[in-house]
Length: 357
Image (cartoon, rainbow, N blue to C red):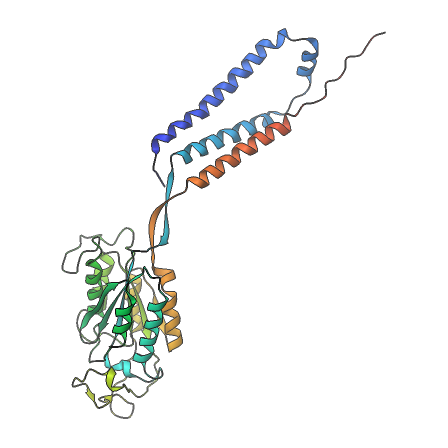
């Protein structure tokens, strides 16, 4: 907790002044007791409130003054709040295995649909960037609050050979570094121990259906992200059931990995390989950066994972003033103290002296 006006704590001197005033009034009352009438002497002789009843109101009142004085200094607390300036880099796998039909009509189409829903569901001020990766990784759309170029880019995704998960993470880090001065680009050496402290609000989300086949090792790339306080959330998409791999003509890049509408050797019984998700690596990448790994076996599960992500990742810590809570607490202490004092010290009837005839 921090204070905006620490000099206001001078109001705390009211506490010892209150105790001094109470001591002075009690001393004065004892001195004047010998000058009062007999009726006053009788009243004074009556049993008064117990010692703890006399002390509780004064201590509650004193605590209330201390709390109010602290509130006058405008205390602030560091709390997690929605980050309007946060950036999400969505890295989507466009390797040839995304043509697998274990998720109808194929993985790429399902991923495109989920990505569109995710983008449309974000607040207008949310900033999103799009990275695609196969054998290489590239920034398709720079982080932006404009949803139109993002949605348009989603429709242009094309599959190709290879899966470079590590390169996708490094590309995302560099995209964040362009807009966040607190994040050094990947070419800059980060001092040892740089992974300590608060996380940046910017986050990387990697959606893949396979394992890294070329480029930088994902663990190495994750270490670079962690050193820059960036969390990486990973999503493993697809099932482990063998299925044919079919993409439409506008979903393939036309490189040597394809023949017609199908990747070469893509279907079961045709001599092709079926690439499975490397969940161990994806989990390690997420955990080492403070993120989390999710598994999505079908289109609905992928949509749910993406739509639930902002509630977990788009937060940053900010100093929020909590003066009102101190004011309410201080006022409550003072009111309780006054109420107890009035109740316990309410007037008691004075007995009438006997009259002799």
